[in-house]
Amino acid sequence: MTRLRNYFLTGLVIAGPLGITAYLTWSIVQWIDGWIKPLIPSVYNPDTYVPFPVPGIGLIVAFVGLVLIGFFTANIAGRTLVSYGELLLGRMPVVRNLYSGLKQIFETVLAERSNSFKKAAIIEYPRRGLWAIVFIATDAKGEVADKLHAETDVTAVFLPTTPNPTSGFLLFVPRNEIIELDMTVEAAAKLVISAGLVNPDYDKTLPRKGAKSDSDTIQTPETVD
Image (cartoon, rainbow, N blue to C red):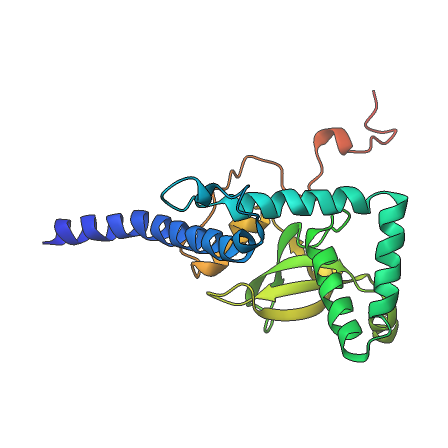
């Protein structure tokens, strides 16, 4: 019975994530198809010619549409139209706040120039002697940096919660109190979600971040032969 229970738990660990991933992926495809397919003319809709619905057509059309929007927006005429559109939205009392907030979120998360959440680190939280995993966001700027009057650089970090890493706390921590990790952000997120049960592989032989190699040692006159 013990061996049967172990086999069952092993199969659950393997099939569970695969099944949930497949279900969520299929649900997203069906949701996008439900929005896009009614907008496709029947002449170009494959469902008109086959006896069964073809999944993923709406997803493909949406992808192509977004690429075309980005292509036309990249030129001068497209940027001009976008500027006039944003100017119009900026005069609407409620819509302008919603649009500006959503635009800032998308630019922060998706823009290539953003360096948000590129590194994982640990800090002492909620008290000395206790350590928590955080994601480094950016250096503190503006009024926050000015009000802190910190002699050292202050960095904004995101402290995720377990098992849901999408919620958490925004903390401003002195740079010298942050210990960067070699693991990726994805590996750190898995560690947080699993409550410490899934640990990424770590090679102790690799040089740690901030460690000086022999070639970085400054030779003094006494060490030079």
